[in-house]
Length: 38
Length: 592
Image (cartoon, rainbow over all chains, first blue to last red; front, side, top):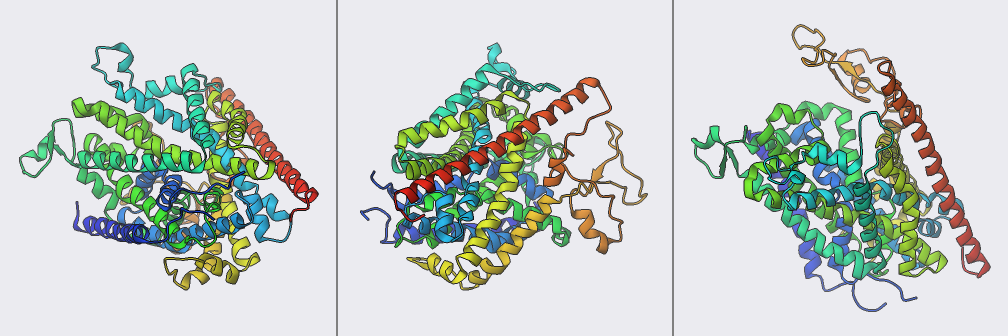
């Protein structure tokens, strides 16, 4: 693989890992879950 | 009747992500990236995600939760609750119609993944097998499964039909179990399994080391049958071609990919979100589902299909094939090169496609069920059966006629064009009729993620413009094909096998680039991929060649005409149901 290909792949992966990880972290550590009565 | 709710927030995220993660994540995305600039494709891709994907996700979640507050779980009611004119509920019919039409052919593909997974698991696609039944090649297996044959309008396969109906029955059964015990449970199992299967295949694929590179050292499994390193395939996907960024067609392709991958414009997100309480967050939950889809598409989808195919076929051959062709016609044979692992690999590949498909197809059934439950008081079981009954007359011709008729037409009109049209309608409703101030307030209610204020303006101005550009581009798409010329001699290149002229610059590209490149725009001809071209059968020319081919083309045109009448009929039928439901509401003194 060329260096540029590595840079683009790892950058895109990085953005997605960080965004997905951050969202799941916030979601799973949130005290507000959707269960319970209306 | 007790009000249905999601059992858990994670379950909702997985159900929403499952709705978005479909066959396109693993088959369409890598092919799109390769064709549109490799790594550079990800620049317009992420821009489209920011200005169209995420905003529309939040808009649809907000619309769904808002409508749910008034007891609406499908788009006719949701739209009507946001717009005063009675016309909105009829525009909301698209959110029922689209799901039914897409489900009728999507479930057919889903049944193929089931059949391929089962056949792989018992050791099929193995030319060296001692059992004759297991020796079928993927194209032979596909032909037997679908009954497809060249120039044949009827394509009937008894066991293919059996598997299709089994697949429909599975979907109806799961839907009849309701949100929490049906869709949510399947998503909680299916999504992790899909991701695990994909990770295993990606790692095993990247471990292939061709014999020619074995001497250079490195890690992996030396494979005598490999002709190239899988990293060459990865490079093929990711190596940026920056000149592609100046090509508007690449931006259009990126916007299209973002649009279709997130399952926007179908009404299924509205439906799922309508079961969320008013005080519950949608900003963080919606973003999590969207990013989970991106993880499955870019990281997993980009690392399996092309790298493995390149390792065994080489770059040149992979360039000639579509993602769908590679996935169904080539992959089962390639897995045979993994020896004892072949059945497991084939099962995992088609198993992950099956889970990707079923979590999406369930999302297509729920809005129709919800409509019948809310407006006509159907029970869960009865509404699931009614969905199956509605599906049957549409699915049957899909499975019994050539894929060039109902299958392709449904895919275009419902699976492509209607989605963009619906998204334009809902964006106008949300930002301009309901009002962006009220819409913004709705989006931020209970939000656990601070949505930047810039999205207020993006949703109001940028997203509608983006969508309108896509809609116009898809409606008036020209063929635009021009011969490929040698860069030095400028001679028209010919295909070494067929001797025919090689063509390139498909669609709008040559017309958009014409003012800048100096190349004259080609004579205007409607593309068979565009709305007008489809209408005039530009993709089904009557050939001058053999009479059988000409007769087949005429039959296809006839089939497509019938198919269009069926689609119009289905839309009218849904509209009548909506009219009936609202008449009932008025008679009961409920707000219409």
